Length: 181
Image 1 (cartoon, rainbow, N blue to C red):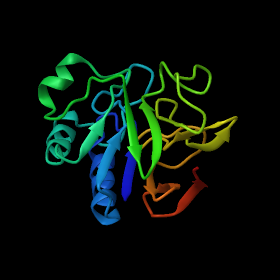
Image 2: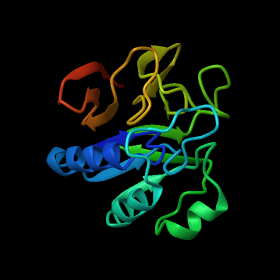
Image 3: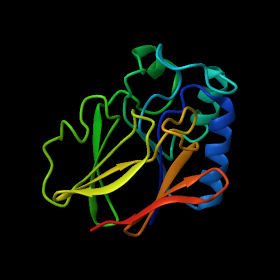
Image 4: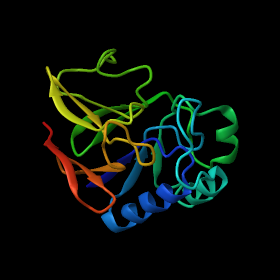
């Protein structure tokens, strides 16, 4: 099975459109969003085409295909306008035989690991820095940011296909790849 991971849309209608186009073209079964969907946050500049109401409408069209976790910019009012759950701090997902602890990254991250087992995978956003590494007995993954990338990275998302995790830019270039398991 194929799954798409993305984080940190931050209300950008421009990048939400690009993300959903990439999602449709990818053939992924689910879109897993790692938080910070609508609000840009006080530490970030406004992203390109900042239009949270447009992002709401676009994402709600895919409500039956989205799994998401709460980012540090999500609030109860976001749940009132989004038609899929957005307030869980984390999700444990078993995808293609692999166990993922999915979270935004502002609480659990490489420096504050969640209680996961050897071989499990921590996937998070928040830093706007892409990552795909084996650290000790676990993997740490971050698809980067769709709208406000940092560290000189392009805007990115990731695809999990079988046990391969690929981070791609919106031109379809593979930026980083790792085989899990």
